[in-house]
Length: 255
Image (cartoon, rainbow, N blue to C red; front, top):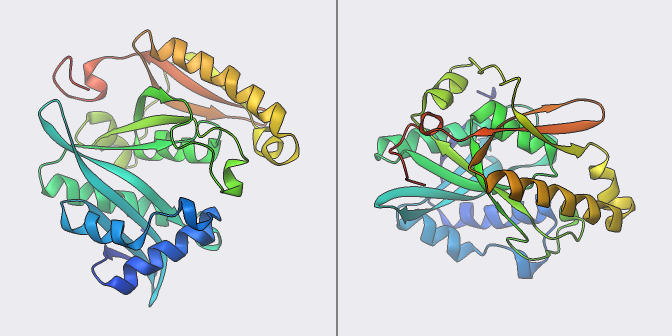
């Protein structure tokens, strides 16, 4: 828990409007790429989630999810979750995600999905190591090229995070007991310098992105799952191992 921060459901129009403002402040989106206020209203009324992180009266972050249905079971797709840059690295993002988990489980929902950029190593480590997601799908240019400076004009390639809320893996990590990495896992490496290349040499960054895409598509196409990541001074190494049902604690064949 982040001291002095309360996470609660958003219900007022003013709170939904603040979620729109935060998108501009965090991603730098132009209006055409913003999720509009009315979508937050809809998500809150149809079984989705809109949670705000409040420091006093100020909302400093939010998470928004919409309901989905696949293979005969409900799940939530967490479309956006973010914290103001000045308030990051204090546990607020994790607090928002754990509130999503608590709410989902209270409603009998055991899966939350979202997408994340495999070139953003810090966020990937948060998802894989601090929350316990796995990833079995890679989507090329999921949202098209956007106006956000954070995306560097690159295609919005994404890994799909699967957060199986009752899996032994997730329950252990949420308790603060991270699982050891599989030392025999395969690896897809992303150079740490990609963050700077997005700004200084977009063509070089896109070439690396293409190479990373090919590797992920090959491994995931052979029923591997991303289960962890290590990061050193030069590379982030995504760890992949054959998918087994215990990773998701679900019936065989379901996705």
